[in-house]
Image (cartoon, rainbow, N blue to C red; front, side, top):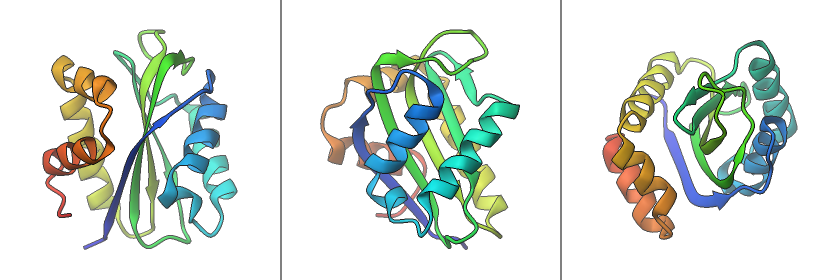
Length: 151
C-alpha cells in the first residue's frame, strides 16, 4: 500500500493559464515543493496537459503526472476565484485544481484517488463547499474523510 499525502492548505491561485497554475500550485503546496525535483514534476504534468487536458468541466481540473523519485502519492488542491484557462471539455475556466503526483508502483491507489475525486466533484454542493470553505483544517478533514484516508 502506497502512502497518500493530502495537502490541502487552500492555496489561492493567481495564475490564469494552466501551465502557470500548475507551477504556482507546486510551489505553494508544502508537500509538492518538498519533492527532490519539483521542476521535473511540473514539466511532466505540463507535458501531459499539452497532449490531453484534464479540465473536466464544471470548473474542475485534476492535473496529474508521474513522480518517479517519490514514494508517496501526493494530492494538492488549489482554488482560483478568477478562473484558469484550462482548455476544459466545456470551455469554461477552472476554479478547482487538484494536482496529483503519482509515484511508481502505485497505479491502483492512483486510479482509486482519481476516480473518487471525480465522483465527489460531480456534485455541485461539494464543488461549492470547496470554493466557499475558508478553513483549511475543515477542508482537509472533509476531503480526507470523503476519500477514506486516515489522518
